[in-house]
Length: 113
Figure 1 (cartoon, rainbow, N blue to C red):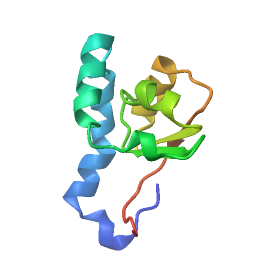
Figure 2 (cartoon, one colour):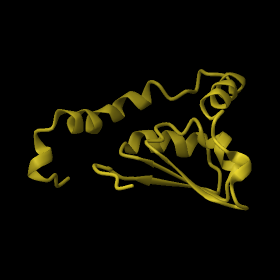
Figure 3 (spheres, rainbow, N blue to C red):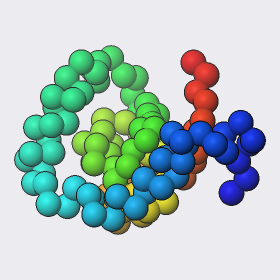
Figure 4 (cartoon, rainbow, N blue to C red):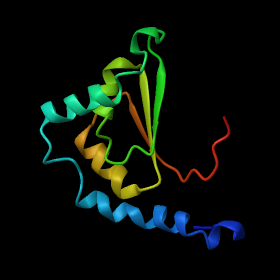
């Protein structure tokens, strides 16, 4: 991987690169779907799902193991799950093989809003 000079010594970036090993141990497989749905509903309580247009495109930046993908995907036309960890995305793909979910490995250093 080519990393710009100003990033090479950034410890936060280094932690992001090496965090992917955690997903093989903490893949959410031991959490019941009822418990995940309960947490999802709390986490997304403020999101205006009813205001979305028909078949919207959505994204989950830093999706990890994709635990929210299974609950978001029925609400959108396409869901882009983006993470810097290939290990996390492999778990997400295996766990949620839903056709409208697009999995992308990407390192996002700067987000312009």
